Image 1 (cartoon, chains in turn cyan, brown):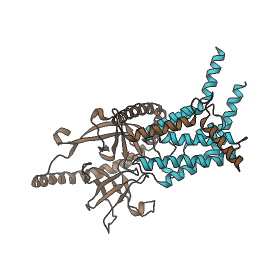
Image 2 (cartoon, helix red, strand yellow):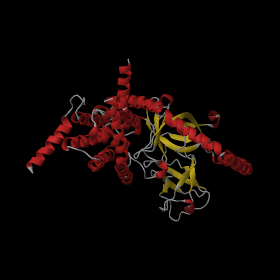
Image 3 (cartoon, helix red, strand yellow):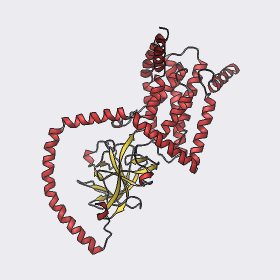
Image 4 (spheres, rainbow over the protein chains, first blue to last red):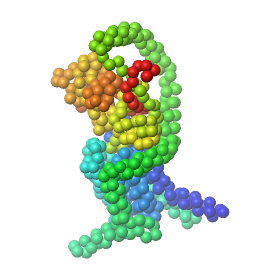
Length: 171
Length: 290
């Protein structure tokens, strides 16, 4: 019984990034702060990129696809827009994982530029060509910029968390 | 050179096609699935529209439930800040009541005069609206759309394009209707364009959202004078919105912090603070509205 409780706790702890990703996609949690005008960032991109790159067993591609669909419904975008951009971010992360032997914060951070720019570019192209929603270039640019700038902050938080769960598993 | 190209090919193939024990689906399959979903959604076929409407209703409900802790925290913050401001607010309200008392007599006189003039001109007296009340279920800003979701849909007769009021002031219009939920495009959204009239000068303009808190007025006549106390109402020129719905006040040049040379409108109902709204279903005569 004690083992089961520990197993459940460990499972829950390992699923935390996935739970956060689903929660951010489905809830009112806002990563755009209205009164700061230009400040907004894409937390989903950061979570997806970090976990696909560092520990893909924690975040399944199927769930990433599902979160994208939920995000499209909540933001009233055409279904499939966010999954395509999220899967592009996953593709970049998976490629970097396959191509590099040892990843560091700096290498992760700079390759993240391709993921963010590409992800937002896909969203922008799909919205611009297939929907009536108007998008401002500047807003998307600031969104990409702040997502890039904030990546190291979340990198450290996720590294600490990852170390915490691996210590628990070997406990 | 050939080796580096081979390495790239191997890495990209591995990234795209590998599934195995850790991943149930490969990225390639999911990218194809996303493209398929996107294409189907764009086809706008009737069964797909109905399916999307059901998905929307379900996700909005789930979203409202999962957002309740955030909504509770936001409501608590608002309650506390209101509580601490009560004394100052009370003093301000006393002054306002005095002013309103004076204005009431002027209004009564103008109302009588207006009725008499309408009789002379034989105008349609349908000035009230039949509305349906709704609660904001979901309020999530995005870089793409400033919109909110309400808990009423086609089940109570809501249709696309209907105006939405908060405390009698326009806040937006319906842009998506599901069976038990609808989406309102707020006035400050980039995609919002509303024909407006400025009172008392009577100049026509288009109220245009720019993705920021205060929308702007476009297509104003040359030589427009931004003076005190200019109020903006809907003009009803699009034939969709009813004329005479109050929107907001024009911000005077010296109060405008944006310094972009735009004529901005401070909305009577702050879109970020709206909790309950009324969707205008139709015009009704005064008796029905009562």
